Every structure is written in C-alpha cells, then in structure tokens.
Amino acid sequence: MARLKTLGPRIKESSGSRVKVVTPGSWRSGLSSSQRGYDYRWQKARERYLQTYPLCVYCARAGRTTAAGVVDHVIPHRGDQSLFWDESNWQSLCSPCHSSVKQAEEAAGSLA
Image 1 (tube, helix red, strand yellow):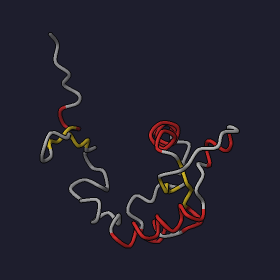
Image 2 (image 1 turned 90 degrees about the vertical axis):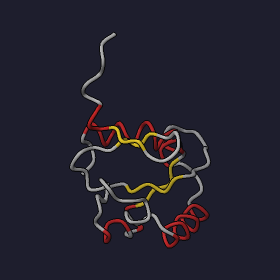
Image 3 (image 1 turned 45 degrees about the horizontal axis):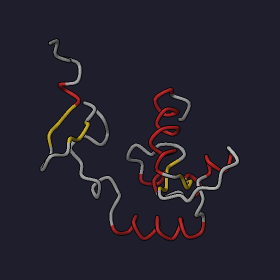
C-alpha cells in the first residue's frame, strides 16, 4: 500500500482524537483560536451580528432561506485586526456554505 507523503508536514496531532490541519508558514501556525482573535469579545460580537443578520447570504443568492451560524470575513483578515473587526467585512453564512462554497472561493484565489 502506498503512503501519502505530501500530507505529512500539513498534519499535526492535537489533544484527543482530533486532527488539526496546519499549513506551514500560515499566519495561524502555532496560534490558538483566542490568540487569533476568536475570544470572548468575538463571541459576543458574532452573536450580536447573527441576531441582526440571521440568514445565510450565499443561500439567499441562490433563492434559499437558511439560518446562518457562522460570521465569515468576506476578505480573509490573515491576522490583520483592523480587517478582523471591520463589520463591513462580515457576512452571515450557514456552516455548509462556509465549509464548501467559501473555502472553494478562497482556494481558487477569487478573494483578496
């Protein structure tokens, strides 16, 4: 059986049975979610934003009505705190859209 050698440097074990994907050289490497800005202040801002904008914007564009559960940064902030906290850079997404459509857009480089 052939082993996949290309995934080795991208995978890091974390506590428990979960596997954390880490891209070498990424701005998030070695930082916890709270160190990246996703702390109590973010949780409160996220909750407030989702109360104001409760529907997924991607689903709405497709003519569907879906509750959002994620506040996404339209332009990835990559650690830039002014961009991170700029509410005009936020959008409400459902988890499936955030995990598929948005990730595909970022991978294709169609976002800044």
